[in-house]
Length: 266
Image (tube, rainbow, N blue to C red):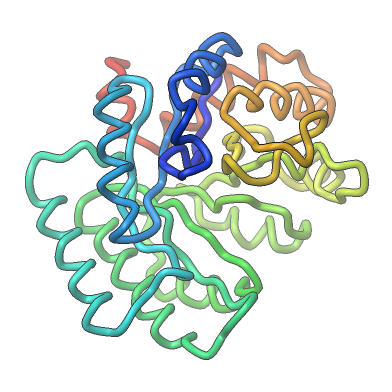
């Protein structure tokens, strides 16, 4: 069994054929899919599809850095998160959260404040983090060091960095690197970084659907069934059988997502 740890199946890209996407994922050997939330607006649909496909889709709750609003709006969302997490709830992680200075770093301080608040929620409620970071590695490391907690777990989503960056991220023992379609791209340096610097025991697989489809689907809409193509590539990178990739990365998921483990009856 494989697990897609990051798929935006709530998006409009899947509005017309989500049922077919789920069928194809199951046929490809995908046993579970984790669905991140990115804003106030997306949360209702994340909740709805995870109820519709309960036991296969599992929701997260969080505010993505590209979707932060005013300070009052952000505080209201974080307050709502606290209320939901304080009661019985289905959320397996806080995410997708993080820092993104790629297009605009004018609100750097507010991004960092909102990220810090969500890290604190993860610590308070014992949930892992699904962390997005783009053009923000140094700031992310600073924020994480300020809140270093041996009990904190999570995934550094969509890793595509250097060996040095991987070493810094993996210094947080409860965290895995999320590896997706970039690992299959012809000119990607990621395979060399993984084989030299990242043990398979610190990786989870993700699609980030509908974005960044792996080869041979590059340029098309990504979907969770393509986790299988990423697993095939990882087997080549690490020189192991595909079955070992499945077993190890699935075990890694359960190490991080404790609530998912309980829900699965493991």
